[in-house]
Image (cartoon, rainbow, N blue to C red; front, side, top):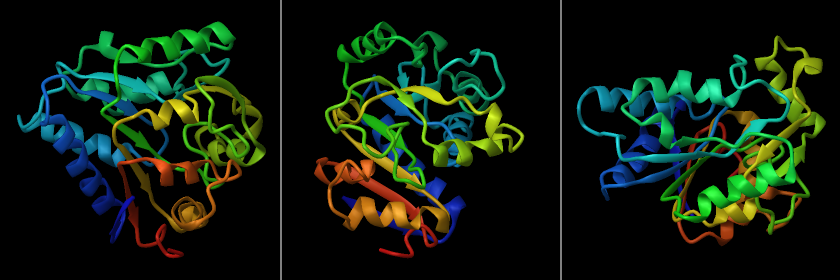
Length: 238
């Protein structure tokens, strides 16, 4: 695992984009795994900026998203479908037919999404990390062998996400559909971005802790190609 410590979030986003651009320019057709939440927004802004400067194109790129809330309309302002369009897809030249997000609440929905990824390999998977070290919506206790599945969100995750729902926990969906940990681990390369002192314990557990399902991100110690890009606050306990 390569660890890059940056001064602040702006520098984290720029360093993360360097990794992204290297992958994007390495081959004609790239498959990206993308994340939502506040953490990757800076990266997506860097992607859009460099596209607009004429330096990179996404016309032959396919994307798969990590997760989506269960029971939320796709056009809801806080759906991850809306998030991806607003923060990235509307600002680059990607074919929206190649932007694939999980959706639904049944075992078949999960199996169908998993099958959609089986025909290709994700070249670069973008991850954030939760305060409880979840990746995707794979909460502590999730099996390392898990594929795309329906997740019951823990109270800590619901509380973290309440800021997107008027700080009202009762408005936050209680379930999500998420790529599983085994699905994530199939990616050829992983970049995990973390910012802020509130992520320091999770980052420490991921990098230096025991590999345990109690700390979902710790499984990344077993991946062959992981780059961790963190600011000084998130790296403070390393």
